[in-house]
Length: 127
Image (tube, rainbow, N blue to C red):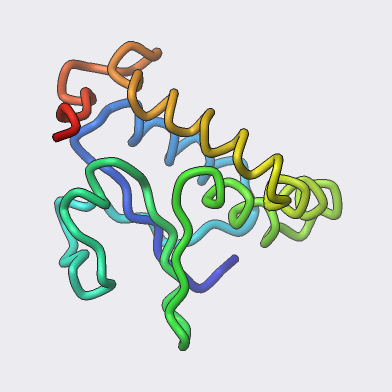
């Protein structure tokens, strides 16, 4: 996945570290920008969307977006390495995708407790 944009929480040290780690290790990586530095509404995303999840936006037409477990599948499926592409496709399968979504949610809710996390990483309580 070369064309595109990764929107993430730039106030969260864990999120920023994770994006930098992935950028350094994946050959193809979308342009990344913190949600605080972009008009995410132009992509149809709300503040609640970008607060609760990172998003990959495929900026080609038609506009497509991935978040939660699908985000990892999309990142890996676009890599030149056969093993990473295969892994990305496996992560996109319905049963596995559901498990990835649960894992993503667990990480997102606890990101302030993870290495590199700070109190600014804590997600607001759900209404």
